[in-house]
Length: 165
Image (cartoon, rainbow, N blue to C red; front, side, top):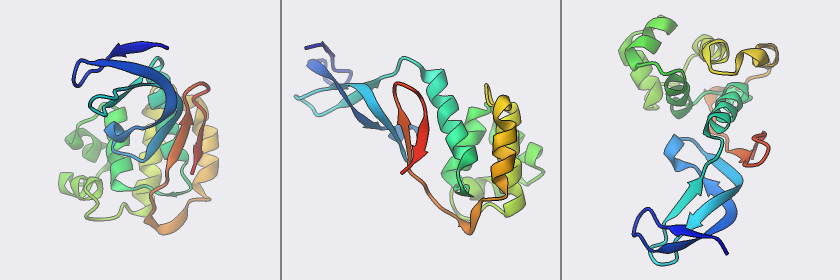
């Protein structure tokens, strides 16, 4: 049995294979079959992430390929994935800073045209996503709904492939 020190309380904790809900991303993402440090003493759980860049790329790809309108949390994730400030992203999208802020906080839904533009920028500017531009653009016509819809994203810790739950 493999053990490590708990990052929260310092006690010895078991390393197990488990699904891990990645709340840190602000999205509904579950990393399936991840190595997780699970502390019996305090209940803390920490994932052991070996391929963080690949994981973030998979999350970004799952967001831009989602068949529903983007939520505010997803817009914020894309902006941060692109390493842009709110002001920089708003300028790129040709919207006011307050508009972007309202989108990101869920106060206003993202319009259809802006949704497509955000996906386009994410794909063309995002690290390692450019080779997927054809797939993303082809799927843009199939985006459903007038309102944003939250979708759970499940990502395999081994293959980094994603699916919507």
